[in-house]
Every structure is written in C-alpha cells, then in structure tokens.
Length: 169
Image 1 (cartoon, rainbow, N blue to C red):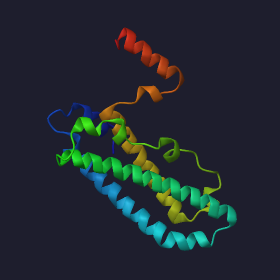
Image 2: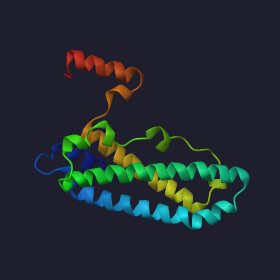
Image 3: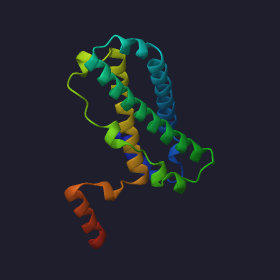
Image 4: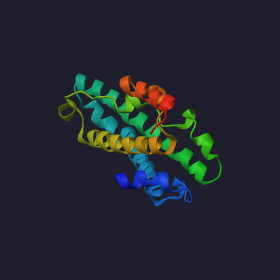
C-alpha cells in the first residue's frame, strides 16, 4: 500500500473504501496470511518448536502468540469492513471502538534481540510480514476512523485539547 493510496481514501465520498481496489488487495493479502500462519503454526511450526532450546521454545511461544494476535485482529478488522461493503453492517457501527483495530501494545511490542538466532526462519518471516500488514491496517484504521485522541500520550494529548478549545486553524 502506497502512502498516496491511504491519503486518497479521505477524498472518496462517492466510492467507499470497502469497494476500492486497495481494500480488495488488502483483504486478499490479509486472509491469505491468516491461512498461511495457521497452517505453519499447526504443522511445521510445531515440529520446529520441539527442536528449539529452552530459551528458543519460550521465545517461540511468545512470538507465535504475537503473530496469532496480529492475525486475529487483522482478520477481524477486514471482516468488519467486508460486512460494511456487503450491507450487513452500517459504516458508523464499524467505526465504533468495538470494531477498531486493537491489541496494539501486543502486536507492535518490541521483540528480543535474539530472534535471528533462536527462532526458525519461517516464523521470523511470518512475524515480519504480519507486522507490516498490521501496521498498514492500523494506518487505514486511523485514516478512515480517526485516531482515538484519549490514547495519544504526553504533549500530543495537550495539543489536541488546545485544538479543540481554539480550533485547528
């Protein structure tokens, strides 16, 4: 997804995001990655995890939960957007906090420095790709539904309050 594509979403009043080519590509990519991740974790990943050191096995457990959380959040968000497109959900309902992309503290948390040495290459690849997809969807979520200003830390929160009181100009 290119930056310009995301920014242009704001300028599509006659063509909703869920009907766009960008959404179709993102949906297909997301669902394919969900399936690929599930196949790996239920199959080859289990075998690879058995052969890891104790430290590697602990890291594997934590990072496999992280990739699973990313994929669950991603799939959920994409399916809600598809429900909007199909007319099964109203757009304003999809924008409520209940349906926004969640678990950012887990999905975007820092990993240990030893990932390259301790984890199988296939899991490392899924971690990189799932983080990239999650970040793109987080950006889409922010553009489409706005940032939740209550979660913006420090000076940004104060600046936002000033904007509310005095206007954005």
